[in-house]
Amino acid sequence: MPFLRRVTGGRGIPDERLAEVAEHYYARGGRSPINGQTRALQQAIRAELRRRGFSTPVLIANRNSEPFLPDVLRGAQDSGAQRLLVVTTSAYASYSSCRQYREDIAEALEQLADEGRSLQVDKIRQYATHPSFARVNARLVTDAVRASGQDDDDKLRVVFVTHSIPTAMDDTSGPGDGEGNLYEHQHDEIAHVILDEAGITLDRDLSGALVFCSRSGRPEQPWLEPDINDHLRQLAGSGVTDVVVAPIGFVSDHMEVVHDLDTEAAETAAEVGLRMTRVPTVGTDAEFVMGLIDLVEERAAQARGERVDAIAWPGEAMPSVCAAGCCPNLRIAKPAACGQD
Ligand SMILES: CC1=C(CCC(=O)O)c2cc3nc(cc4[nH]c(cc5[nH]c(cc1n2)c(C)c5CCC(=O)O)c(CCC(=O)O)c4C)C(CCC(=O)O)=C3C
Ligand SMILES: [Fe+2]
Image (cartoon, rainbow, N blue to C red; front, side):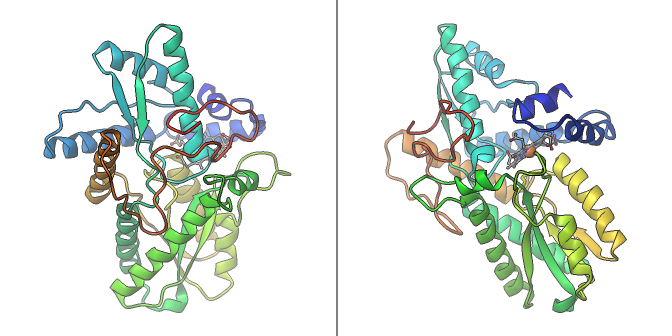
């Protein structure tokens, strides 16, 4: 509950919802698998850096549980660090998946400034549009479609899933000079190229849809839809027998995946008679990790003032330094690090 209260900090998520979510954690020993998964990613990043000849220390900091960001920054400075480069475990644009992290970095730096400390913190660009991310997801979906054993294209659907967010948050996602809705748009584009790639590799005419999980908030507040469970019920009545569920919105098999998909959505699928194959998240896939370290090198080159060609697929590269006012906090304006504002 203390963790859940920190996550939702004053955002009007009803207590009943928190009590319900707490049960998902209690059912798994009172903790999330995300901690172990983040440590595995830390090791994989460290190994890839070593392979490229860098001995840079790799630290973990959380927004809502130990080790907390300000403590980690303080510790890093005590051991001699002057600059840090942030890699978030979150790929897409939006307030929840990008700016909120930047606000927490700014707040931590302010705390340190009050203690007379100063550190420079930069961040790699959001990597949903770095080619490695879509490529790894396409390979994982291809393998899962093959493993499903369903060869009839009419009977199989790929169900792409991401975290629902309030529609008001999606509406303002993006650099601000664009049309908004960049969160949903980036997912749509990735879902499309994955279907294309998997279809080409398997010589099949695959179809699928983008759906959402883990909605919270007040019922009267609109969030992105359809919910995966409603979508599965609908598919069952349309001749589909097999679903391949691809959690493209997440980078590890954390609680949203093991509970909301592997438990809840799997129950719905069983109830309506659909066979469900769940695609793994990118996790510590070597190609994904290499992509992250390519971005680390890209950001370092930018910091040295070198011209870099920021590769992207699908869509456009997100900036390493976010635009002023992008993906705004809809409740209170707060300072955010790693951006023009
Ligand atoms: C876009 C997005 C991502 C993906 C990008 C990213 O990864 O950043 C994400 C990831 C995650 N969300 C997580 C956990 C939770 N999110 C909650 C609540 C919320 N998430 C939101 C959005 C997102 N969330 C939003 C708009 C809310 C409403 C309240 C608010 O505006 O803040 C709540 C409160 C209870 C509830 O209502 O469900 C919990 C416990 C965990 C940890 C899982 C674990 O422990 O294994 C992870 C990785
Ligand atoms: Fe969340």
